Length: 263
Image (tube, rainbow, N blue to C red; front, side):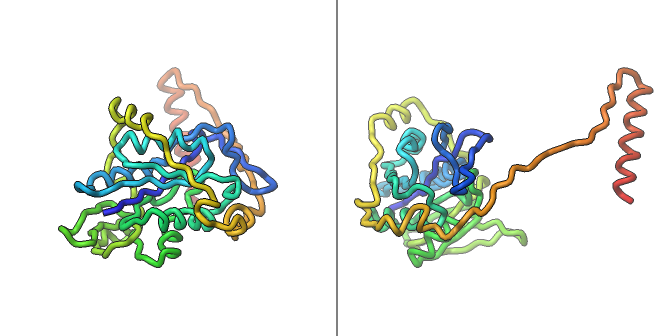
């Protein structure tokens, strides 16, 4: 089985900067980590792999993403392929999915795994868009994933508001996972040595036979029309309780405020 894991580098900070004119995230200068749910997807791949299977990590991002993606190699992936090109800058989820699909068509994949959503955009759109572009089934919100004997199929549990939906789906397919599916392991020293003995493969728009007009900001139908930063103001009352009487007065005041809110 050829397993592909879609992986993304996300900012390792809460202080994300945005370009107000382009409506895109400024990634230069921000430390990067692998999106946590993508590590769950990779561990799911490692748990079902058998002898002869291959696990390939695919990602689109700036050149510095190579460093973060090495974590995937340290955790057992066979190879990492990074699509990086100035033509990809400003891509929304649709344009990103086009690049990932071009990579998938180039390397071939029976099962495509990814995190349910990323911590920076939180759209949850890339997995479904990749499946739509490839014309294959998708399972989302997966919390259990197993092979079905020697059949070209998987069985999954999907967590829904109404309960757990168990389904069997034929390959090829896409599955996006939640954190409940597993606990990703930490990298070992041997794994880190292996990761730094292998260079991630780099592909560009040209090597993927993509027209620059098909990707990047200009080919992205999503537009951020305005960026607002929330202003948090709190009109608070402060009680310093050094004695039981002060503590009781403070508790009484809390009860009074909550009672007013309930009216």
